[in-house]
Image 1 (cartoon, rainbow, N blue to C red):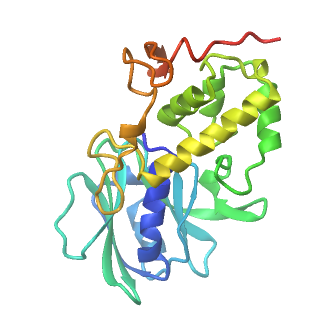
Image 2 (cartoon, rainbow, N blue to C red):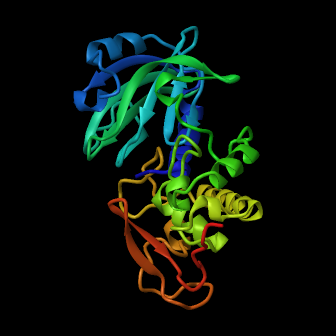
Length: 290
């Protein structure tokens, strides 16, 4: 599933093309791509056609584009395989194309914004904007916490919340209501960098340990952003269809049975929540709760 770096790469690619553009046409090829817009395709198109896009925002794995003069936004969740692609207006249909928006930008002219999704777990919607602190966010996003590279992220609140919990630290990192944008890949990489065993209980970590882990989360996410995200196959691409290359920088994730880049011990792969955890038993010792 795309995680924060992959979604941020898409947001940054969309921004210059869509901000200030007017939606000229909406074609829904597959209503499964509107599971988050229960009013259906006609309502979705009616709310968008003629609307001007005011911005391109992100929280965690959600993208949204506020509409000028409205209390609504075009909201996207990419699910496991969703893609937002920029194409020429007369470009042929993409494989697994579900929705196509025609937009007109005063500087760039006509552009097609294509939502393609192989597994159909992603969705677009026009959603109401609601207050969340000093921000306005889509109602579907309100429960999502800020991410670690958000300037408004509250480090002290996060550290205190971790140290109150008996859950494994990896589960805590994946809790999007506490810290958003981290999935399996970046959780494994951050825990490896901080030398923390994924099954260590949150309450077993000291304040300096949680602070160090949070620092490593930021380093991992920023490095992944600089490298365009992590791509293992053609599903994880930017708006131009190009793959990221952070996969070449992974130290733990996907390296089960291979030597740890730090100590040379074998990276272990274990089942975790219908997925896998990857860690070094030698470098990442499990700590007991006090």
